[in-house]
Image 1 (spheres, one colour):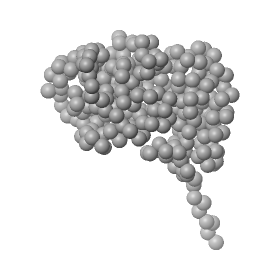
Image 2 (cartoon, one colour):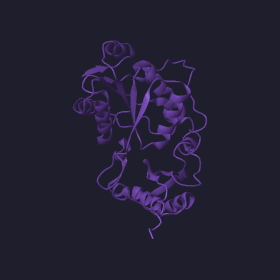
Image 3 (cartoon, rainbow, N blue to C red):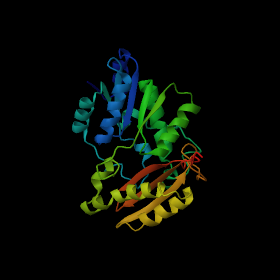
Length: 284
């Protein structure tokens, strides 16, 4: 496995890399969910292809009051996980190596990035789109793997790839969870034992409300009311949205999405709201 810490060195490593090249963008603090993304990338690349994992805590997607300085940084264990999961190249640049001090060009998606996390975290998706666009230009991947836990991010990246004609196939991976249903997240390490004990209730409530048969708006309203009752929980949003447009859903299929503070940690999750099954008339 090759560790590259500069744009120049990763480009040199990729000059002789076999195709297809599959990229897994991460911010480090890697856990089992990231491992599964890398394993999927290895499967997509095949035995002869190349898997690149980027590890970069991107400063441009953090707000002034967010946890950039405290975001988990565990390089030694990250590198070991990448190697065990089948990565060929790790690209781990510094902020100074990725951004010029007088930078003035950004990539900004202007529709899908506005609601949900975009509403409560202004500028977040401009930072996400900018860094992902830079990674695509640097690595030149054939495919890139993203988890479905951040459904809005996945939708925004797909839109950017389509609108800017990136020759990159976006490959989604289902949310990876603990045995009790909590979505794996680097921020879970911030949870106190008491918060960790109640955190799985968020996903349980989302699943129950999504399966209730209620309209999307009613399911979202019910889920918010129930999550509000979780100890130490403060709801940022709970919404039922169209899976592609992220606009409020008027019918199924839809996506029930949520962002909830449990103390200081902010957890996101989402579940599918499938179309109701059609009743097949009984044969006479």
